[in-house]
Image 1 (cartoon, rainbow, N blue to C red):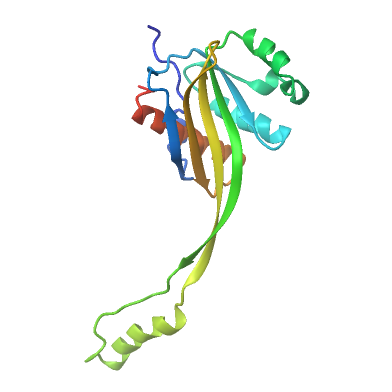
Image 2: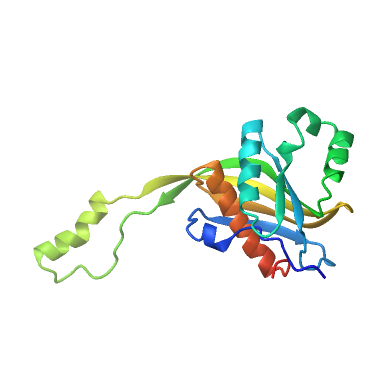
Amino acid sequence: MKKVLLAAVAASLLASCGTPTSFVSTWKDPEAKPLAFTKILVVAFVPNEGQRRSAEDQMVANIKKAEAIASYRILSKERMKDADASKAAIEKLNVDGIITMRWLGKEDKLEYVPGTSYYGPSYYQPFWGYYGYATPMMYDPGYYTESQIITLETQIFSFPDEKLIWTGHSQTTDPTSLNDLIDSVALATSKQLIQEGLLQ
């Protein structure tokens, strides 16, 4: 059996990635075995062509132990609309795996952070002790924080049998850039695949 050659992310590259991503749902083919891909096509379904290219390039950069190809290099925006032409082009690549990413949406989340509260005894304190206890109640009220949550769908297919092996819906909070978003999703995906026994 081929040595597992898919590395969805290089730990050394992403150790500093601080943007949190978590999976809200995943599915794995019950019969799936550890991934042994040697040549992978990366396809991003995102709002515009510029984002597609950037997202695919960044995911390709995160795949270190297998050959990875960004789909935009063989499939133009117009060609992607033609399923038969796309299939023919992909088949010529002789890939054995496909990773897709699909933009599902963006949510702005507003959260309330309570102010300072202390309910310990206030009696028998000298004035300045009581002052320090009471002042925050007046001058440290709660406040609101706003965060942005990006939801992506990541899927892994074997090829040429086109079989879906794994799918997951992830949420990333406050990515600083598209590259940061993809790095964070790649890291979370790698950890999830290891947890589910698809990466070793």
